[in-house]
Structures are given as C-alpha cells and as structure tokens.
Image (cartoon, rainbow, N blue to C red; front, side, top):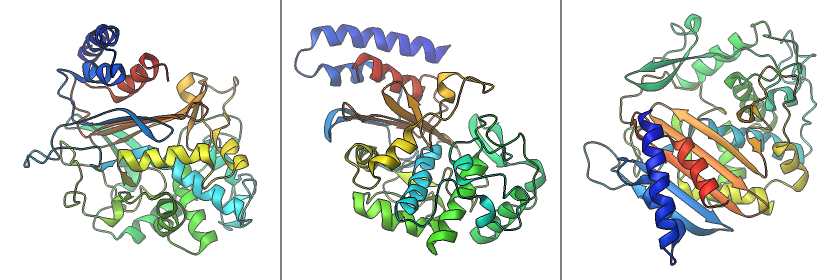
Length: 364
C-alpha cells in the first residue's frame, strides 16, 4: 500500500511538472516520480540510441560514499534469459542446430528426450520441473534449490560440480505436464539451454556470450556472477542485505549476468538493427507462444523466447536478492527503458511500476 500511495503521489507530481515544463518535460517527469522515494538505482530511457531521460541515485554500498551512476553495474536476474535464447538463435543462424531438435540429440539418456525439443525449453512449454523454491529472507527475494537439493548443491562445491549435480537431477525428474499443453515459467529450461550452447559450440556458455554477443555490441561492463567476487566487483552496486541464495554455478543461462544501463541499451537496440540476430531470429524470439488454453493468460504471462511480448513492445523483469530489474523495448519506435534497484526492500519503490508509469506517461 505504501508503494502504491508513493507512486500515485509521484505520478500526480510528475503530471503537474510535465504540464509546466517545456524544456525537458520527460526528465522532469522522471525526477518527480522518484522524488522523496529514497530510490537507489538507475533509470535510463533512450530513443534510437539517444538519451531521453535518466536518473542515477544512491551509493554503491552502505560502507562507501561512491555515487551510483548510469555506468554502475547491477545483477539483472532473469533479464539474463533473453541472452540464452539469443545464443541458441545464433547457433541456429550458424546452421548448427534447429529449434525443433529433440533433446535426445544433446542428452541421449534423457527419458523425455524424444518428446521435448529446444523450442519447448525456449517458450517455457516443456513441463520440466522448476528447481528453485522462493523464500523471503531478511525481506529479500531469495531463490534456493528445492529442498532435496539443498544439502547437495552448496557453495562448498565448485561451479562445475554444482552444474553437474543439477543437470543430473533435472534429467531424472518427471514432467509436470505433457509438453506443449501449457505454459509454466521454469528456470530449469534456461539452465538446460545454456548447457546445449556449451555442447554445440564446444565453448563455455560464458565465453560464447562474451565472444558472440558482448564483444560485438561493445558491452564492456557485462559479466557473470560466477566469474567475479560479488562484493569485490568494481563499480557495482551491492545488495542491501547479504545474499542468502546458493548461486554458484546454477544461475547459468537463467539469472547469471551482471550489467549496466548502457550495455543493456545496446543489446535492446540490436533487436531493432539486427546487428546480431537476423529478422527471422528476432521474429522467433518475440512471438507470443502462450495461448488462451493455458492456465493463466494474463498479459504478464505472455512469453516468447526469453522475453515477453506486450502490445507493440517487449519486456522482462529480473530478481536476484535485493536487485530488481525491468527492461522494455519498442522496436518500431526505437524506445528502450531500463530500470534497476539494488534495494528492493525499500517500501516506496516498485521497479515494474516505475517502468510502466514511464512507458505510459512518456507515451513510449
């Protein structure tokens, strides 16, 4: 309720300022929305590569006075999934795989390998069981491996050991439903997609993304949770509570990236310019594969390949500890929106509401 009231007041202030400000009304709108909320994070709105408005507030951590800027890095959670989808589509463009390949081609001993395809993983219609449970620890959104895995997947293991344990477990689980009969968001799908990238390319998943996506797009501030010290990473906003999530190895493909506003803006723009993915691949990625027969056909459940179609735009959110991210792009108009906080425990802030208020208020 506090969030809703704060955002309504901010929106009302923004509308007043929007009416009175003729020089940079979009910036005034954003400033008014964040006024008095104690926002810690970054908001960046661009159109065709040019900044429309931006805000960067707060400090990188509670022990430092170093200010957050538009270049500051954050964990971006499930926004990472669209990069796993893109990696698969790049391999498809190379002629190395098909979205309709059966999983038995990559996991020969998987009992459902002849029933499931790569496409079922991409569009979340596989029926493969979710391996994460959600809990709230210290008021932070926390994903932990499901109960039977908690004593096995630990931070005492190496990244490789945890990934091997998780893959073996996933390939032994019964399906939750018959493939392609329902949509169900499951992180497990994108872990397996990342493994397929490794199997096909012969590279580590992280190296493939660096070589084929980050480097060509100039995403010089983007890396992976498993490759850095989360609390020692330079120019990074720290979570406002100590993360309780067991994350070593098992966020691969599904929530493993650290990035910043400008790098994500480059990525979103590439969906319009086809700098990496050709028109056919982008069309495949941005088609809504849910349907009216699914259990939940609400707008938020629309799903393509790692991204959610919504009207004329595309969006996705991401959670990790106290990080909350929202991205939105409208390829036809060239607008991109990136909003992130490292302090989702702040009751005055809801990143998704900030994002949607900007999209509505700025007529994006």
